[in-house]
Image 1 (cartoon, rainbow, N blue to C red):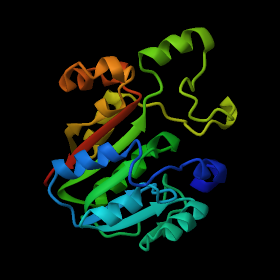
Image 2: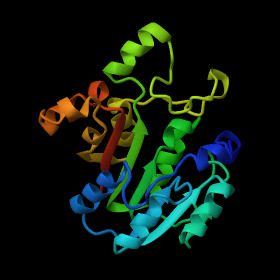
Image 3: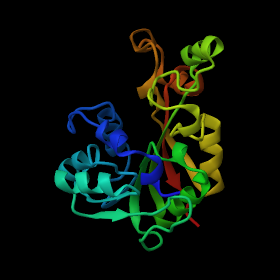
Length: 235
């Protein structure tokens, strides 16, 4: 399932904004404050480089981007990212890297597009160093406000991630919650290190007064995204 056949170029074009200040900037800031400084970083599903160029420019690391879209990789190259690799199918193709190579692997908004996300997770496990880290982000389609919308509309896309898609060509084919992400990564010898899902809390003006620990406990109910730093277990 080559990604560029199922993730159209116009979706790549829709990934825009300020590379230095976007909705994922707080995640990256907290990530690099929370872990040992990584030397080798791999961004699986780097897209057009909007988020990766900030990592490359501002953190003392060697950044490598991987994507299944040649169109996205060309844009990432134009942004100034020079270490880029193309993968034909994230569900079957091995990453072109040796075992235990990266200190940090980032996989943002990818797993929900895959028929076999477990294969990619196994590759993340393979290329991450023992005691290395993985930053994983997937959308949560059904926090409490989206569940209420679903009751009345039966719409699987309550946040309008892809408003011009139909159910037969909807780009998200896996619908994760917190426990499913935790279970999947535990199968491949990762331990949750930090839950960052509170960054995607709904009703943020009200929820900001709640303790972060409480918000993370109920991520499925109050967050529109599930985001974890995982640590790879040592043998």
